[in-house]
Image (cartoon, rainbow over all chains, first blue to last red; front, side):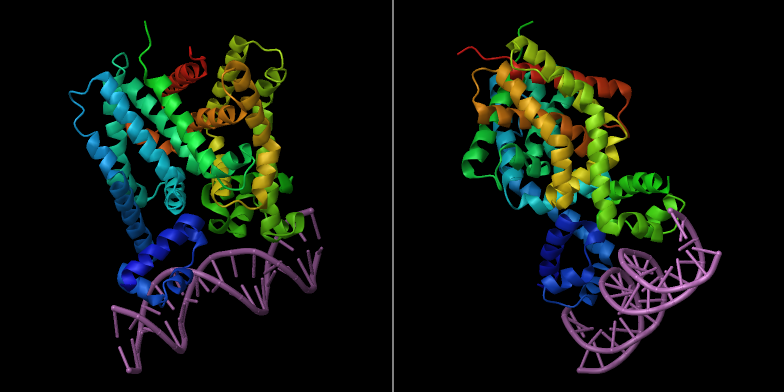
Length: 206
Length: 206
DNA sequence: GTCTATACTACGATAGAC
DNA sequence: GTCTATCGTAGTATAGAC
């Protein structure tokens, strides 16, 4: 119980302020326990940090599980079906980027992207790899004119459009001249994302 | 001279390890000077941090100045001309995201996006606003079917495709199964980015 | 298991010599 | 202007009571 509270508080604090920016005393205080319980349960501050990576990966996987399961059997999908699945997957991913819960996760993940530690491996293998490979497989079904590497590049670009909703949030708000994203603006962004993805995925006439 | 060395070292250290993750002693050591010179020149650690924000904004502006100047007079551009300018601007921005120098900058900027301090204002006003507004203006010329808010959303999505090249670098490398991005993969990504942007910007038949 | 108390290190800021 | 020396604070980790 204390263990779970410590983990939740650690996700929040590490996500928002980074490893060095967070003190174990803060996390312990937010969990209503003593700092030494971190050593007891996780061995060290670093041990807690790695546990947070696993925790985040598990939460993301759970959140995307439905959308990924629907896209699991892509071997015999028609291009049109693959596009439908991709649009649904993009929408699911983008909604996660818009959800408040992803703020702390993304802070954690983005730091690991720029300065990968052992935690990045856990994040990628635990949550991101599955989504990336599913994307690539679906794109290959949708755009039969692309080879494997082109499909991977396309997956990167599609994901980037959703990623900026979280990672560039402050700039997005400035571009729309709002303090926080309201429902109407979120809907507008999701609609544009869908339209763009459709443009990209529709196979071009030679 | 010491001042410039401190600033350069601070960009690197703050960018890679964040404000709390960087000690003033580290920065001073990397600059070959004493820690107390930070207090002398910048007043405090925070003063140095804000100076770094201005420094980064200036460097980005300088780097994008040519591409932005070429797109300055958009009032009478035809849709085809606007698309050409946008593709050039996208390419310029994406190449900055691929350049090694942007690693430290982006670390700094991304932290500010998620946890904006006074430094974010300086970054946005000093470098990002100009690019964002230029993007929106050009998109409105290229896609006459979009209203202002739709054009802003489209700008966000276009920038996201380039942003992921830096912010999601570790994942991009994993998706391509490489340690670092080689020239061939970079060319592939730039090519896909251009193709996607073209798909998105080509006005759809009603 | 969870707490209090404490050892040890590193931090930012400042004072003062030169 | 740039250095060395030092102060006060806050950090992680550990030991030991309960």
